[in-house]
Image (cartoon, rainbow, N blue to C red; front, side, top):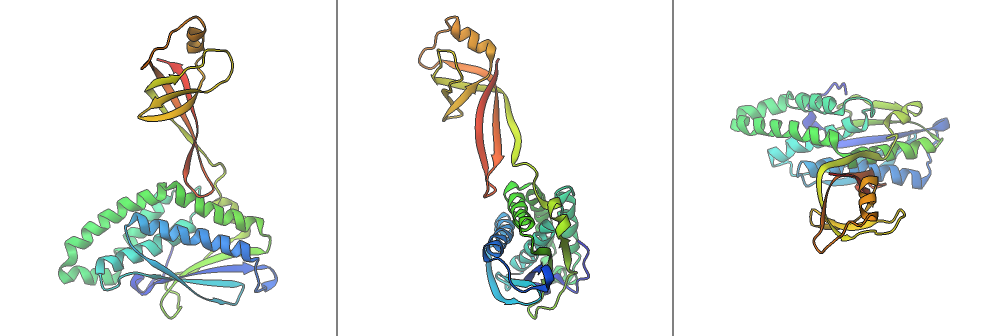
Length: 291
């Protein structure tokens, strides 16, 4: 994200502008509310990663399409919190304006570096806060990586653009960081309608987790033919699983006995996906083979 910033510390407002067809000023309320909801959850999700307590206030709508202003409120007297608040807001905009095919980890890294080059942070370094700011920068770099890998944030961003793509009146959106007087302190970043798909996750399915040395205590074996689920205890949790090992099925059919406490060493595959809220959901536990 290229910016012409006087100081990041002047920015505590983000403007989200929905540009509509024929320069209209009305928008489907459900679409707007859903998009605002996902947008705010991205900001809140990033703030939580930084352990920063923030209040997000909305201000009256503006014309020129539909303009939404969200003010980020935090403890400005606490210099560390003030710097962290700036980081949260800047990274939120960076996340929202980075296509899924672009390496988000590199973008967030560049943004953190740019923030810590800010002239007001340099002034704070001269106020005997150099070591604290150095540690904050290192911590911010690590958390920026967490943000780039966060599935919940990625899903909420994707849902935002997915909703807009289905709403034909939304020709483009733009996002700007502004000061308290609503003067821009960053370049306006515009996302056109024909680019919305670049921000939408193609599949909600995640790569399966594979445990090649899983140990499952059998509770309820399946002794007859058919695709019935077994039950067992895996890492202290009772679960149902699919037996996909034909070799083990054959052993069962030929008389393998199960006693109280019988266990199986196996290659376990755990199928996962991201739900509509951006949370990870387990779909299936599959025993691929007996070890």
